[in-house]
Every structure is written in C-alpha cells, then in structure tokens.
Image (tube, rainbow, N blue to C red; front, side, top):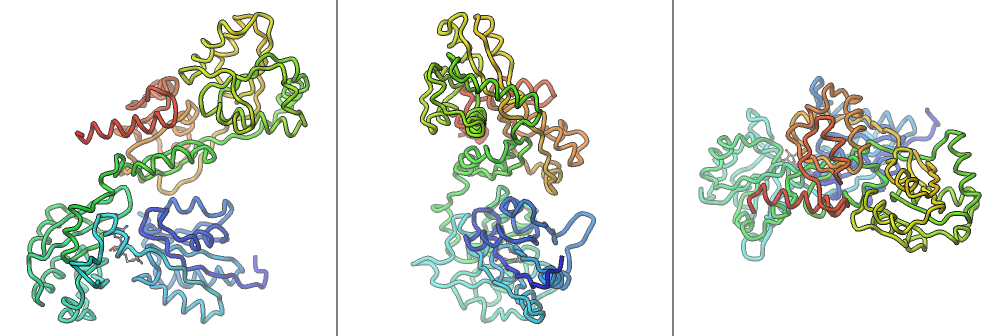
Length: 519
Ligand code: SAH
C-alpha cells in the first residue's frame, strides 16, 4: 500500500547472537516496525519481538538459494520504505563494524529515505568476553584493533598494512578470519610477534554452540585444521587470551551448550524460559498450544448457569494456572462478584495455582503434597461430605480423574470448561533444520497436549517422522502423566522430576547434565 508517505529504516545492531544482547533502542525499533529484514547472524529468537503482523524477510543463505547480494538488500530497504513501511534491518553485532551499513545508508539517503543507525554490541568484544577474554587489561594490553580477515582464502587483503597492524596495539581481534588463520599468523610472526603469542578462536560466541580453541601463533593453524574448526569465529591474538584460564564463566553454567526447545504457550513460558536462561541454556520458544475462551454456545451457556448459582458451592477446585485466570475472566464478563462464593472452600492443585489465586486475594484452603490431580483427590477424600457441591473451572482437556472421584464420594461435581486448549503450529523456518542437525539438545513438555501438539506441529513444518526426529534429544516431562503420553507415542523420556513443577523440571535437568558431565 502506497500512502504517499515515505517509511523509515532502522539499521539495527542485533548483537552477537544471544538475543538479550540487543539494545533497548534496537528492540523498540524492532517492536514497532512493519517489516523486519534479517539474516542468520541476527538471532532468530529476536523475531519473537516483532509485531505479530510484521512482514519478515530473510535475506540470508538458504540451501536452495544464495545469500542475497548486498546491492539487492540495499534496494529492498529503499523499496520497502518508499512503500511507506517502517523497516527494521537487523544486522549481526554492530552495523558499523564490517556491516556494510554505509552502503545501505547511502542509498537510503540518495532516495530521500530517513534512517537511524542503532549501534549494537559487536562480536569483536562480546564474543571474547563470553569466552572469558577481556580485549584490554591493565597489565597486559592497553589497546586493541579490530581487523577483517576476509574469509575467502584466495582474497589476500592488500589493504592490511601488516607491518603497522602487527605491533600497533596490544590485542588484535580478527573477524572473518578462520579460513585465513595460517596467513594471518604467518604475517604477524613475520612482522615481529613471537610465535609463542597466545591466540584464541571463539566460534558461535554467546550461543549454545560456543566453542573456544586456544593455541599460539606458532601452532594455531595446525590446531584449527585438526579440530576442523569452522567459521563464524572471532580470533583474538595477545596476552589477554591467558585470562581465560581464570575468567571463563559461560562454560561453568550447568546448562551451558544446551539449546532447549520450550513448547509451552508463550504466555506461560516466561518462567521456564527465565530459569533455563539463568542456568546458561539457550532457549528456543516454540509454543504448540494456545489457550482461548471457548466459543461453543452450549459451553458458554453452561458456564453462565454455573456462575449464576455461585452461592451454592461448597468447593471451588482449581487445577491449573490457566483455570484460575480464565475463571476470573468469566467472573468479570458475567459480572459475578467473587464474594458470592461465600460458602465455598477453594482447593488448588499445586503452589502455582495457589499463587495465582493468592494474587487475586484468595488463599487456597487446600493444597496437596504431590501437585497432581491424584494428590488433590486423596486430600479431598475425607474432607468432602456426601451431598456437597463442587465447581471445577478447567480447560477442555482436563483429566476426568477428579470429577469421577468426587462423584464416587457423593459430591455433585460441576465441570465448566472456562478455556480451550488449541493446537498452535507456528511456521518456523529453522526448526526442521535444527532438529536435523541435532542443534536442539533438550525439549521440555509441560503437559500431554504439548507432546501431542509438537508432533503435529512438526508434521505441519514438513517433518514426516517427528518421533524419529526427536531421537537422541533429552526429553524432559513435567510429570508422569505427560511422560506416559510421550512414551506411548514412542518418544523416549529421559527426565521426569520428583515434583511436577517448573522448578522441579529445571533442577532435574541440571542434575542430569551434571551427571553427564561427570561432575
Ligand atoms: N557487524 C558484525 C561483524 C560482521 S562480520 C559485528 O559487529 O559483530 C561477520 C564476522 O563476525 C564473522 O565472520 C565472525 O568473525 C564474527 N562474528 C559475528 N558473530 C559471531 C559470533 N556469534 N561468534 C563468533 N564470531 C562472530
């Protein structure tokens, strides 16, 4: 749509890969743009912050397509802006450091398109930092240079004055240099650096694949080829490399190197994601369920009738955080005051559900020791009295165990499906590839429906045999019921915590990693 208004282009530094290493200004630009133009170095997870309706244009390499030429990208930005769109162009690291931002900006200027250059954290310093290498140090290096290595081995860069570069600063940082590591070390030694000078290569810094190789100018080329070390990597040359021995920190985190696929609904994933993140995992959110209000007329009618007689219930039994949230949404939309439940005791299945109630000013009267329907059923046995009435606001997929048990005890159990759980199968351009390349190390399932839906969603993303695709991946299930659903479908479950909670899951996974690492 051409409104006659010219759009604006934000040339945004996305940082080195860890999606949290973007600036607030960059994030704001990303959040409000109509179009996001991105490539592989500018982390896929960042796209979650784009507007849902924003157009996403990938300009990076694909198996069946070459990387878009720089000139084509420049023109694309101009065209989009001339269509009146605001555009966030995400660039790895900082856009001004070997980012060709000059060319993009120049063409925008020529076409009268307004732009902003939003700096980012360059890989030149952040990637070494994640490997425990500070580029300067009070005693070891008081200056540093950032130099391009030009990945292609045949293109020996004549613009680098090795005689000057070699000794101009303490630390030398090379980007795009892996393929030419031999040539680079040779030049540095030739111009006066000792072959004993420490060198580190840090590959995929700040991501789950981060890997560091340390050597000296004398032996690094051999080490690189022996380890079959591949780009992208940052090369650091100088005494600061030795700092790594004392300063390395990322590798010490219990879940370092683990990319975890979180299948929960996005609105519910944040706690799990934050905890995994804290322990050093890289999380990849792929929500396969979404919850929504039920729309079947019969359903809505049943809810209305059940709420209209709020004062008859002896029990209100809540078995999930969602159940609480949607229950209160219904109270609001049906204009029912919570005080009309004055006769009822409130029971919660677990601490999270109880907390959700507490946030609304209701302290649960009952909380089982094991956070499952079974535990709650046991607890209710002996407390309920024949002839009592219980309201069970829940999701359409809730288990039958509790109402059945209540009925056995002579209680009138009224179930209302206050929300529905639906399959969500987001199109994801990376998920199939990541699974195939074994770049997903862990998958978390927090309910049976996440298991069933993931398999379905993967099929919809072109994976014919999803169960096979999950082989070899750590499968973490929140509790035995979820685990059983997974096992029934042929998925081998490797971690089930003692307590069916998010904390329990994360701890059990960390414990398993400790054992696997032999700690
Ligand atoms: N503008 C970017 C650099 C672009 S050049 C920045 O400021 O970081 C691309 C090179 O950056 C790669 O060849 C590699 O040397 C380096 N690089 C970028 N991200 C990296 C990462 N996460 N880990 C290792 N090297 C990275």
